[in-house]
Image (cartoon, rainbow, N blue to C red):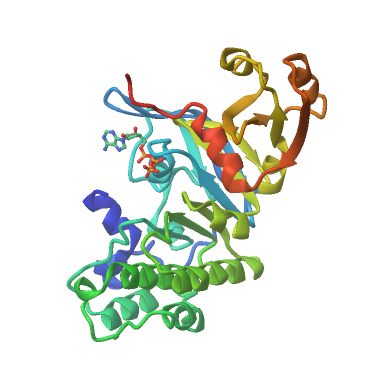
Amino acid sequence: MNAMSEQAQLRLVESPASAGADGPSAGLIAPASPDYVIETERLCLHYGRKRALHELSLKVPRGHIHAIVGANGAGKSSLFRVLLGFQSPSSGSARVLGVAPEALTSAHRAHIGYVNEEHTLPDWLRVANAVAMQQRQYRGWDEARYREVVGNFHIDPGQRISELSRGERAGLSLAMALAQSPDLLILDEPTLGLDVVAKRAFLEALMFCNLQGACTIVYCSHQMEEIERVADNLIILERGELKHMSAPDDFCERVQLWVADIPFAAPSQLRELPGLLQLQKIDGLTHCLVFEQGEDFGEHLTRLGARSARPMPVGLDRAVNAFLSRNHAAPQH
Ligand SMILES: Nc1ncnc2c1ncn2[C@@H]1O[C@H](COP(=O)(O)OP(=O)(O)OP(=O)(O)O)[C@@H](O)[C@H]1O
């Protein structure tokens, strides 16, 4: 996270006077209400020779909780950096709340909450001062929501931010972002480092904000059980490309586990099965995780000599992991 992004994330170091005429406390510009909170068109980002985003065309509709998943290095954080204007794309275009990232003013940014995994907050400030500055910055500040979320942590308002534990820092930045009452809340691995109770409190706060209908939440995480619980929409990125977007349940329905008794099929034959995501031999039975195959997939197994074969549903964790691992980087031998 570079210095510019830290500054833009939370303008805690900016006094209301220095926020300028377009500052959030100086006349809140209501953003247009486009149907999509995020739109990208053939978005590409290269860091030197490293490709982070490739021809990414994505439309995230207003409302609901959207989860972006992908393996390490899939481009999730890079996408957020481009959307928030911290990083210029190599080509293509993006719009956030209908505005191009490079055209986002302080007033627009007041409608966008952002929490990153580092939970960057000014270390030298005391918690109470940081919160007071946020209260002044954001007209829509919701004190009750702030207290509800921060109340799950034993944070002393007199403590310096540098003295907080990782989890407390996470809780504080989440509470401040939620209290800002943003139209769009972008969260980059927000629950990393939170204990079970704090995680649950945070997820409940997210769902509550979303139920109130005002806030669209776009959230990237590797924690599939969380996503299963809160997300209405699942977006899968792979090496900077959009691979899938649907409701999590729809995605699960597309992945099936077939358990078959095929004693004599060669592994090379099994690996040729259509839609194969993952192949395992467990207790003498062949387990095939397959993508977008119908009920007639069993016929393929029968042709390979299966004595029995039955499909079984799979949970989101297994479905997403199998989908991502089919092209996951593996060490060269
Ligand atoms: N500043 C940078 N310089 C060079 N390469 C970078 C830089 N930032 C990211 N990358 C590369 O861009 C790709 C996408 O990185 P990004 O951080 O967006 O992935 P991610 O999906 O957020 O990963 P993770 O789940 O591990 O946080 C990776 O291959 C990464 O190595």
